[in-house]
Amino acid sequence: GAVVSQHPSRVICKSGTSVKIECRSLDFQATTMFWYRQFPKQSLMLMATSNEGSKATYEQGVEKDKFLINHASLTLSTLTVTSAHPEDSSFYICSARTRADTQYFGPGTRLTVL
Amino acid sequence: KQEVTQIPAALSVPEGENLVLNCSFTDSAIYNLQWFRQDPGKGLTSLLLIQSSQREQTSGRLNASLDKSSGRSTLYIAASQPGDSATYLCAVSQGGSEKLVFGKGTKLTVNP
Image 1 (cartoon, each protein chain N blue to C red):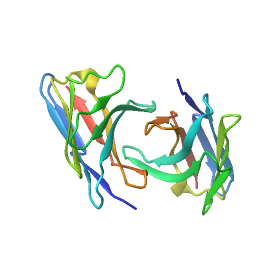
Image 2: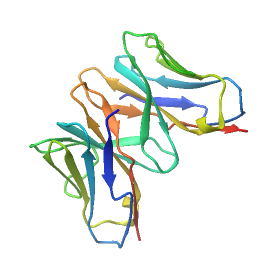
Image 3: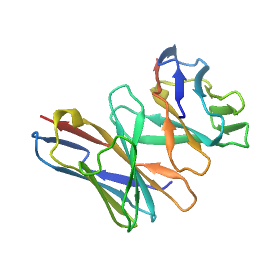
Image 4: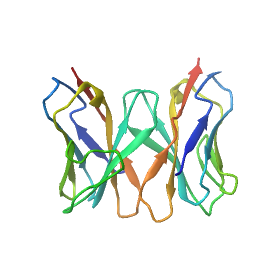
């Protein structure tokens, strides 16, 4: 199956700093990537849909100025959490959609904001 | 607004037992339904995908059924093994939308 990677797998940062998370489709081109957030014992919640070469579409309640998404190429999307606060601590997972409309998920990034 | 519910939240069984995980959704106008496996601190692995026109899908010891009209799906795991221990997530997508709506998952523990 297709492979999606995320980097870093874990990150700890101080409150007020910005953190960038990368999502890469390793063996296929993905015109669309998705960013999810998962709190402990909760569902994955879709944050935004990232389309290559255009602005991301954010879900209701997700601040676009806080969660900056850049989908600069067909294999890379980045999520930057700006001015991170402890409440942003969560597990962030990306997925990439193939041309066959199948989503493959990355291994996730655990963000801890102190 | 689509809501997905999974019951039970947690399940512990002895090795070798057959088991059923349940998933229900409030809006029956779905495009497809997927079952995923998530290991602790890891991403998701797709197990089975059922299109809205299908009734069931099988892969090895796994069988997923879909009753769209009643808004229900089940994941049947035969002859469970300790390696099956994980959280199982159910997700639906709406027609014309790429979005997946997930349930909270069922945490399965298979005891040796």
